[in-house]
Length: 163
Length: 148
Image (tube, rainbow over all chains, first blue to last red; front, side):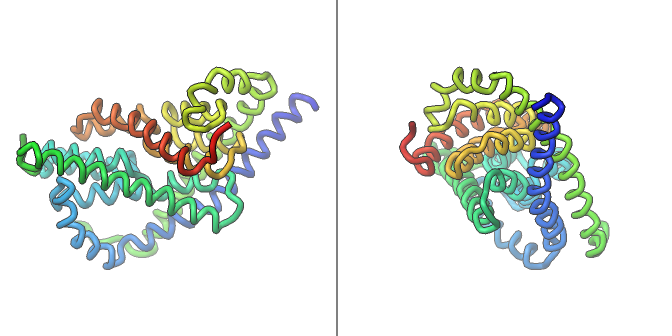
């Protein structure tokens, strides 16, 4: 096989791979944009508040948390940076928020990319996505819950206050 | 407060994000596949694989899997996925790598972003890398049958 032929072949399989991923990625992103403003999600946000405090965050953290969780740190930064600059969020809380987002972010795009690599069909993709997303969320909750428990045991006032 | 965007605006934004993601995907995947193919023909993939085998075997992964890990950490998830796709790994291996890369990717860009948001970025960076190794080890025991 000639060098040109080899390059063409590799380019073609790269394109096929991209198309396969795009077929899932584009509808998923559109669906997210369309569903995000539904009132159900606002209610979820309010329901989140008591859980947030258990993880060392106050209600103003909810918006950047959700943005980073679904869209990723870089997309979410547009929301995170201004809120952090307004000092609505103390440094301890910001650390909790960042810790959570480092463990678990861009839950749609990133997990979908990994789920698609070498998957046999839509069923396997969905199964892998749920597995990856679920595990990362559990891990984030465990890390933050553990950190709060540790801070409490040390007798420190659990976050929320500016230090 | 600005008025909430209409469904039409939402649709447009979704399409724009989807289009942008596709553009990134194509721009990154096609060259990655070509370079990976070239490297394979030159024997470089085998060499990297052999060099990284001892380290990657901790995670029950082939040595070549070090390539998507490094690409993911230093560049981004798209490049890593493209390299992943060209290696032909098993489902359990992809899950393990997905979790490892999920914890630690685009480290340069994301750490910069976190730093500019005022977070303790260096500590978070260390946390991510350590967690990635721990999660990778745990996932390999769960999802990859007893290794080679």
